[in-house]
Length: 121
Image (cartoon, rainbow, N blue to C red; front, top):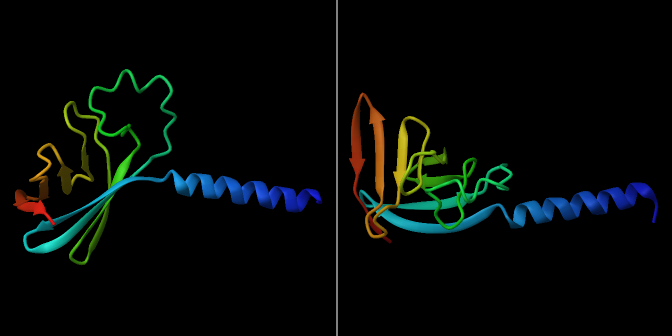
């Protein structure tokens, strides 16, 4: 096998490994009558040394992680905050947190805060 083929094989394997570990969980909700899905995604952070220092880990989430939220005609990629307590995700306009597993918090800030009611799907 020549070196170019070996390089392609190695790069392909690295991409597969990276894609396989990219998502950690997926959940579905009914928010204001419409289906909302949340997919947790891993960020590009080296967790060595951080795991013991982070008080708000949920299923191994770390700074740099995020979520893909799909609702109505929206697809939002929200980064994880570093707030204490249950991990939350925000881009400054949209905010998501699952402190109560039956009723997650879903907000939109547009001058004032609009709260969307969510229940398990």
